[in-house]
Length: 124
Figure (tube, one colour):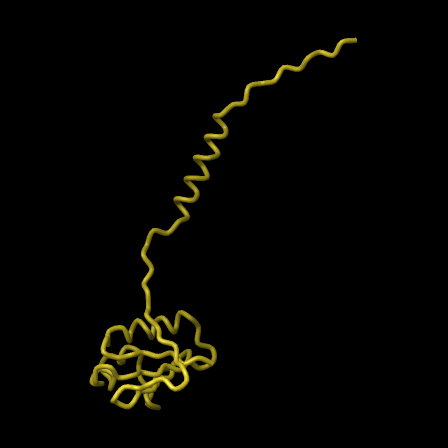
């Protein structure tokens, strides 16, 4: 008995092109083309030099913000003692337990309105 020779079918490129098109469409729709905002941060180091003015201390908790021990409203940061600080004044930013990244970003965005401050985030 002679084996019947199987004929190879020609490979169809249509389905391959469809798959590539669907992948391209998927990645285009799930990609984000917006530009992310960058927040400049200065990490605190031991023995760092402070400016001529005494530093200000801002403590951030999940629900409150206090400047040198006085409770503040987050929207009132621009009208507080921070607005009248000398150019180059160091602002030490301390985070209490439970502060997430979004809360820190919100406070830093509010402080961005005061460009004369040098914000330093204190680490653990």
